[in-house]
Structures are given as structure tokens and as C-alpha cells.
Image 1 (cartoon, rainbow, N blue to C red):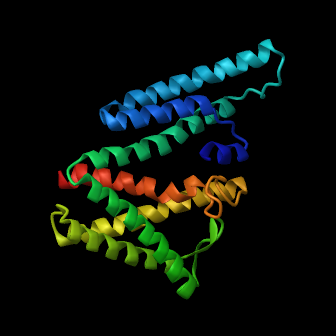
Image 2: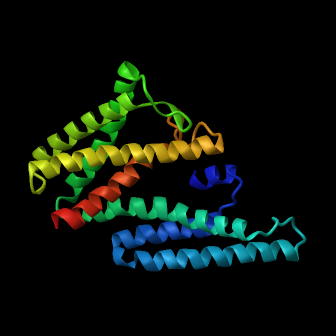
Image 3: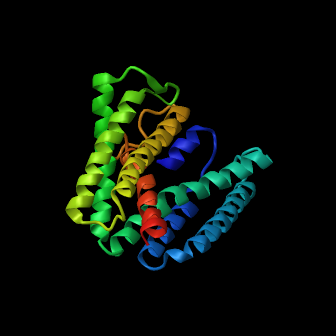
Length: 237
């Protein structure tokens, strides 16, 4: 779905190296996340090699080839690599978090906090929304809805942190963490909305009818997983 949207921007993405890279990110999530930099390096090399092979095949079989430009070559590699990094590495952190102490509880907090933010943003936006946040990206998103999302996201995080007895050092840090969960969730949603708007697409994909695609369901969760993982690593541990 990411590559499909980028394709509508006029930039070709290479699915095969991207999918291989995603599988490798999932594998290191199960085994050793320290190998992420090696996987990223491999992803770049594989994408460049695959691009050269595609161009060579087109030349050998007299197939139509894209006009070569430095900017075009660079963008094709960057977006191909970033697509696998964004979704593959981001979602592999769910595996890493689950394997840690109280990992299942942290994972539930990340998902519920995200969904509570989405629900609060929608509800508050419908009831009180007047001030548009970013009309070009999404005309339906308002600052009132964003504040409502922060409130509902924060409340859900505070409740779950208490129920699960998560080792957050202080009430102040718990509140900061809860606000950040909501903010990261909304930023993730805005990023994907921007991609769809630029591609002039209503949905990122067709696998979840009525819900806009798989990426529409995961766009907010990916950034929250990053927050939960590094908050544990840098603040709690």
C-alpha cells in the first residue's frame, strides 16, 4: 500500500527488495534488533542491484525504459528502502516489545492508547470541531478533535498503566508518556493522510473494505510502537 501510494506520486518503487527487507526486519525482531543497521545496508544494496537488473532486462528485451535522471534514480531507491524501513522495522518493534518484561501489557497499552486517541479525535471533532488543523492534508481534522484525542489517549494510558502496574517512574512521567502516545498517534495518522492526499487516493488499499486499507489501520500504531520501545529503553531502563 505504501508503494502503491508513492507510485501515484510518479515515483516507481521496487516491491521485491522491499518485501525481502520487511521479512528481514521481522526476523531480527524475533532474534537480534542490533542487526537493524545491517538489514538497512542490505536493503539499500539489494534495491540498487534490483533496479540495475530491471533496467538491464528492459534493454536486452527492448522494453520501454524510464528516462534516466539522477533525481529519479535517487527517489526510487529512497522510497523503496524507506517503505520497508517504515513498516517493517516499525512493526518489528511490536515483536521486540512483546518479548520484554511485561511486554504484552506494554503492547496492549500502545494499541489501546492509539485507538482511544483515534476515537476521541473523531468524537470531539464531530461535536466541537471548528478550527481546521491542516486543511490541505485532511479538511475533517480540527484542533478541537486533536485536543480531545490527547485527553482520551491520556486517560486510557493512565488507567492501563495503573491496572498493569507498569514500572513508570513517576506520575509526571506517566502523564508526559500518555500525552506523547496521543501526539505520536495523531502524527502517524497525519503522515498517512498526507500521502493519500498527495496521491489523490481515498484509501491506501482494498484489503479492509470500509476502513481504507491495512496501512490506514496501522499508520498511528507504528509511531506509537517506536515511542513505547525507546521510552522503555532510554527513560525506564
